[in-house]
Image (cartoon, rainbow, N blue to C red):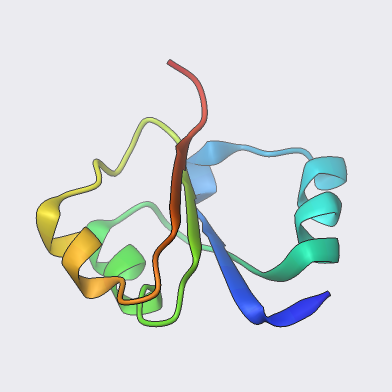
Amino acid sequence: MNENKKIVITRNAMLTEKALDKFRDLARVIVLPDDSEETLLSELNDTHTIIIGPRPYITRELIEAANTLQHIARVGV
């Protein structure tokens, strides 16, 4: 695991444990306790990847708060 990398996953992304384990092999993984924008915002400071479900929407404020953000992935359609 690369402790220097951080992946934040929203609760409603609903990834399987197998998928989470694969991500944990690559980075420190934080699965958020709820899908509020405030909770996501509180974790973005050193995040490299965000994996979201249908909510929350990624806003300009969220992107600007994520100073190390490299990837945004949305699960589903």
